[in-house]
Image (cartoon, rainbow, N blue to C red; front, side, top):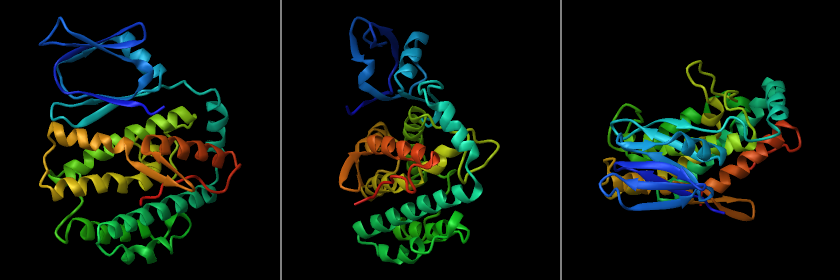
Length: 295
C-alpha cells in the first residue's frame, strides 16, 4: 500500500487515540481529524507551534514512519526513526562489517554509474545534450578512483541550470530548493534502510566523523536526479522561494515514478526495492543491486 505524506505547517496539537493520529488545529479546538497510523509513511512538522505527544511519536516509529522536524526557517533539521524493527539486523550488520574494501568499491561503482546515467537521462529529457555525460558513466572505475562523479557533476549543473549556476548548500534560490528536496529524499532513504535492517552508520564511500548516517548519503545518490527534475521545473516557472506550495510540490517526490527492469514503482517503493537488494548484496546473494532509472 502506498503510504501518505502528512505536513503540518500551521499550529496544531497531535496525539494518539486507538492507533489513529488525532489532529486538533489550535485555531479550531472543537474540530478534530484523524488518520490511521498505518496509512502514514512520512510526517513533517514545519511549524514551531505544533505539539506532539510521546505516545504518538512511539506509534509513528513503531510503524516505521519517517518523522522530520523543521527549524524556524522551515528547513528540515532532524528526523526520528526506529532503531529496532527488523529481526535480521544482527546478521546484516555482520555482513556490512565484514565487507572488504574491494567489495565496497565495486558497489560504489554501480551507484555512481547509475547516478551519472540518470543525470544524462534527465538532460536528454529536457533537451539539454545529455549525451555529453555518456563517456563519464561508461568509464567509472572501481571505487570511482578517477572521480567521474565530480567531473560529470560540473558539466551536469551548468547544462541543467546554466553556466553561471554553482551548487552551494549555503545559497538561497535554486540551491535552497535542492537542499529541501534532498532532505526529503534522505529521510525516505533512512526509512527504507532501517526497515531493511541496514546499519546507516556504515558508509560505502562517505566517511565523515560528523555524519551519523553516511550509508544514507551513499544510497541516495542515484535518486538525486529525481529531485533535480522537480526543482528544474519549479525554477523554470519562476518558483525559487521555499513557500508552502513549493514545499508541497517537493514532497510529492516520494510518489514520482522510478523505473526498474520490467517494473515501474513510486519512488518510496523503489527505495524499498533498492535497500532489499543491498541486504542481499552484502549477504553475497546477488552481484548487482536494484537501482532506479529515470525516464
